[in-house]
Length: 306
Image (tube, rainbow, N blue to C red; front, side, top):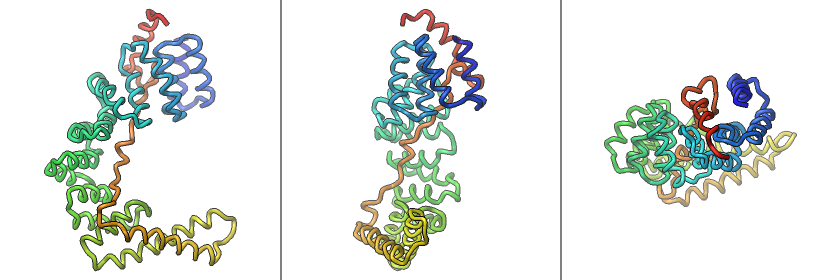
């Protein structure tokens, strides 16, 4: 059966397999011989391909109960727990992987778990290990940890074409003037979401004379967005009544915004801490078999009592 698994994983790696066929064959392998390799491959499929984290968790827990000889099953286990937002349970697994299988995905995932467990300094250091692409996340974590000097140093490395990320860090550093400058640069490109609230609240605090004009600008953009959404719902041209309804809705949304205390109710974007990376953890993947050491794991499975 090991040869059959290797053949299937090769077709998956090449992108030539059928998704439904993958699931059925992986289930068949588990039915024929339930061991670390077959269970881990099936759990990886459900986590990465099907994004069914409940099923992935069930199979990966069965895999780790068989005491794997390599850390790959623990990578998947911790990844699934992160996706299920079970951060406190994921953290010790991630720390194990951190020691035994270091890499960008490992650093990134353990950083997110540290962040969600409010261990900000450790999170910041792990984000730095993940690479320069994560300067924003590292700066946010250092800000939360109270190391403003380190956060400011990292802020300088965030590219100028990422004004939202730069503004986010400036807000945490309470450098509101600088944050407003970055938000002004971002205005033509970002969607109407939490960021427009941030922008307006910054203007209210830093430049009250600009607030009215900026508010009117957002009201116009929001009306246009709502009209477009309304038009997509029906197979006909938007009527004047639809437009009037969109204008009323826009004013209601912005009226709620106007009632907020300056910056007190702003939701700084921390979705990055909910993200997770998953390297290829299929055993016998021709591109990553050296890291996974599938043959070694399979050999140890033969001495395991199922």
